[in-house]
Amino acid sequence: SDLLVLYWFVVNGFYSAADDVVELNPSNFNREVLQSDSLWLIEFYAPWCGHCQSLTADWKKTATALKGIVKVGAVDADQHKSLGGQYGVRGFPSIKIFGANKNKPDDYQGGRSSQAIVDGALNTLRTLVKDRMSGRSGGSDNSRQSGGGGGSKKNVVELTDDNFDRLVLDSGEVWLVEFFAPWCGHCKSLEPEWAAAASAVKEQTKDKVHLGAVDATVHQGLASRYGVRGFPTIKIFKKGEEPEDYQGGRTRGDIIARALDLFSDNAAPPELLEILNADVLKKTCDDYQLCVIAVLPHILDTGAAGRNSYLEVMMKMAEKYKKKMWGWLWTEAGAQMELEAALGIGGFGYPAMTAINARKMKFALLKGSFSETGIHEFLRDLSVGRGSTATVGGGALPKINSVDAWDGKDGELPVDEYDLSDVDLDDDIGKEEL
Image (cartoon, rainbow, N blue to C red):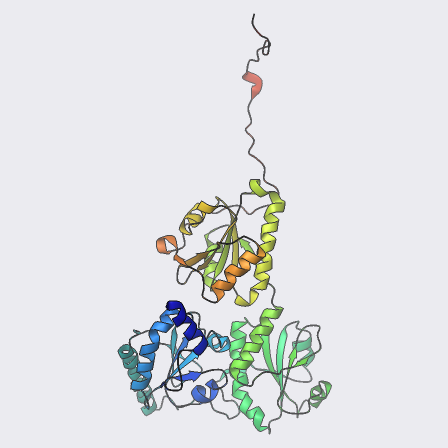
């Protein structure tokens, strides 16, 4: 059955040693791919993804056909999220081509049959060879020399005795700081990894987490202050806390993963926004992989206290899932009827909740209770690819009305005012006529 097939894929992975596909992970990616002169085709997949399962046979066939010519690899990006995140993988399967500049792979946009993939690889290979012939490319771009690493060293902040306190301790932001010695072999090996990680972290945290480096042979006061005895030593600095030793791996994938964890641990939860106009909805759903939308009962049905209790549940869930970097929105029942219709909401009562992937124009509806437990189960299933989805009605975000923001108060019934001055009142009303 399909479930048994899915179970097998999740437990065993897609590829084995018997295949010509190289299974890649954070431990071997640097050695196999980034330090290689070869052209690589790499599939980023998730075991639960149906399209990935369908691609498996063609991917194996491609690897066999290109054996000795082009390297073909695969990354379980569900298990190794750091690698997927490093290369901007948001959907599965994603195929990327690692050519002359391994730090900037290209997206493969062609067909998914083995013939189409092989043709695409050979075309890329031809271009790579022509570039080398004309002197435009020097093969592997991962120089281990000082200043190497694809020119991204500029994103590593040079820290000194003079600027350390101002930049690191007084910033209130998270820093990963490498203490190195120029003569140290392990430091030279770490340098391109640290530089590449600095660029990725700067971009993915919007410059909220920083990677710095201290030449401990020059700035001995800093090294002594933090008990540095060996090289390289990496320390993590967070606002108001004692520095802690970095214990993770030394590849860029390991460093990026730790930096992103630190970012999400210290980041404020995302804003919960009321849908006041089309821009609020569009920006939130475009900027985030998922936007979670609640349609809350009319204010006359709940009052301010009831509405605030629903919003509090949402804010708790936004905090719980802040590492996912999702957008969070709400609207009042009846305020955005076209949106409710496009998402099939209005028929089964309020509060209701949906999660939209605007890139795919797919959505899923909360079927359980609007509670911390019910929403947690809904979002947990979505985050691992479970749960049923449907296409947004009309295939696009619907028309959104501009509305006034909720003032935080209980609603008031509309009052109909009548001018009674022109009404003749019968003095005998209430008397029975005999």
